[in-house]
Amino acid sequence: MSIPTASSARRRFLQVALTAIATAPISAALLSQSGVAADLPHLDPNDATAKALAYTEDATSAKANAAYKPGSVCANCQFFQGAATDAYAPCTLFSGKAVNAKGWCAGYSKKA
Image 1: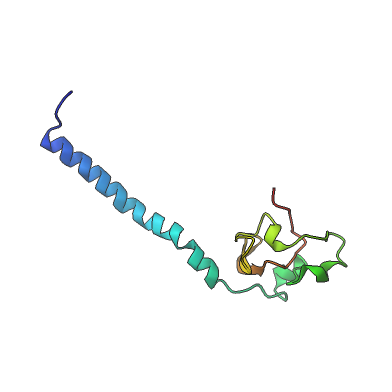
Image 2 (image 1 turned 90 degrees about the vertical axis):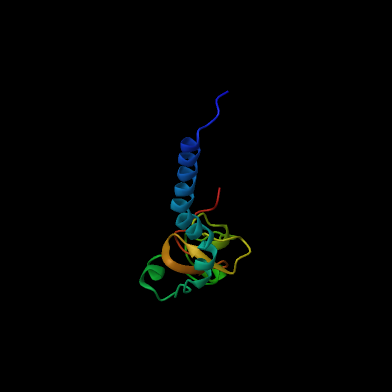
């Protein structure tokens, strides 16, 4: 077993310190995602994309749409980015907007 010299110990310390400094902003961004989601504006059903996908805040009002199936709500869609208990959460179909967990749109795809 060899004893590390002072210069190799210093080099190792600098490598670890620089890695920590470089990853700090990435870690902070990932940890603050939940705060960002709460700040998103709610999707307006009159938004052009919302209209194109027949978005509604209340899935039961989508019964007239041929693509609607009972039990289909945003909360159990693969594009819903929140927990099933969130009232509103981001949706990958509507970038920068939060959708109602009880809502529905024609882009609905059940979570696997």
